[in-house]
Image 1 (cartoon, one colour):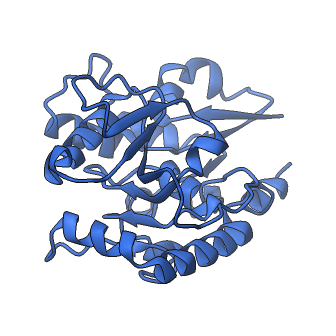
Image 2: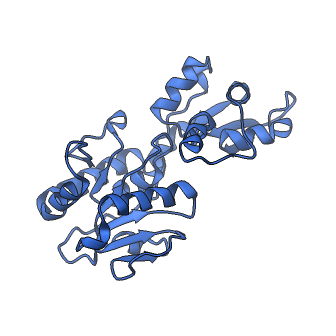
Length: 266
């Protein structure tokens, strides 16, 4: 009765099947990252998309779905401006697993965690971060989690490991410095859900999260290196961020709570 479709672009490609007027099922779009914003990012990094989706075509399929979930405030504002029926929107946050809280201690093996993947934008983000902090001249031990295909890294300073809860929990802080900030922010919510003290340049206040209480927001006036160093040294702040972010996540992004809005339509 319900068909969940991941991204407006996929929905557009299969619209003849999924958006037929005579369909007996309802379509729930997992917004994930509206193409209107993704296209802007493609332009920034000079990537040509071979299957481009025009803004009007995206709006047309958005108007024909039954429900929309997993969107950011900037995407919501954009869709409302484009006259998408507000009754379609289901507030779900970005759902996470039911994690056990990380044990914050001074013996964790790695200093910095970065959750990555083999997607181009993720590789660009981690490369940019390593360059900004000049990682080869630091004493930090980095852990990159995910199927990253980064090459020419100093293997004494940077380890790349498979995704697992144990690996995620082995670092003192998590970093999410992102050039494109319009998507679901999955990696951030996952770190918060584990209670990993998180440092990011993404303002999370729209979700009710507060700087210095649930996470550490990057100050553009200070160097990234200095902010990382201060957070790593401040054990009490890391414990505070860990406890508060875990408790917030348990209440809001744990899948059992995040999906309450969807349960109402099932």
